[in-house]
Length: 218
Image (cartoon, rainbow, N blue to C red):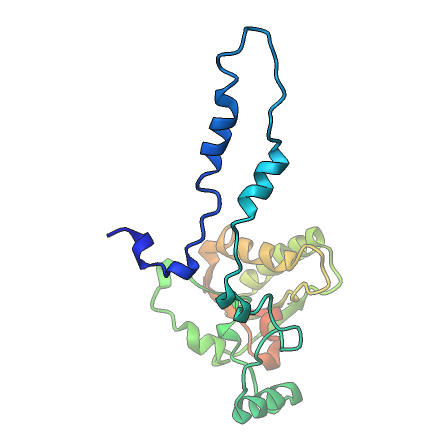
């Protein structure tokens, strides 16, 4: 079935259907003229356009269609928040409620494949006693890397089993947590055979700015 049959007669306006026929008739008389002879068209393009537009009629039904959007309405409808969510946010900002840092992107954890049954959750909870720590605040990335290497060698030599390394979060650095990245690379790379596991510390021990490291005993 033709789609035109579904359109009401009062909406079926085709003022340009005969336009091509009119143009062809206008130039048909010029085809038999002598070669090189030119003749000005009797009907100009403007006259053709006016003649075609003379049959255009207004569709009254379109008067009720609004043009453009509302300028006074809101740009968006704000989502209604639960009062309980507001209370939780207030508790977090006031320090009354702790954040589950293990659900954040900054959280790090690693277990040596040779010790895959190690309970990393207990380490993060603080079940292991921290015997020593190093704070890398104030060091450049290269200085921090050197300090980490020397500290790990010393801790292994001393037979320590659990240490804490405070690397910071790199929030003021334009390049992000560079020291943290180098620390993780050293623990998983050069010192891999000497490390059982490491994980981001609890909030009270530095949170996302520090890690607990469990060393292998000799």
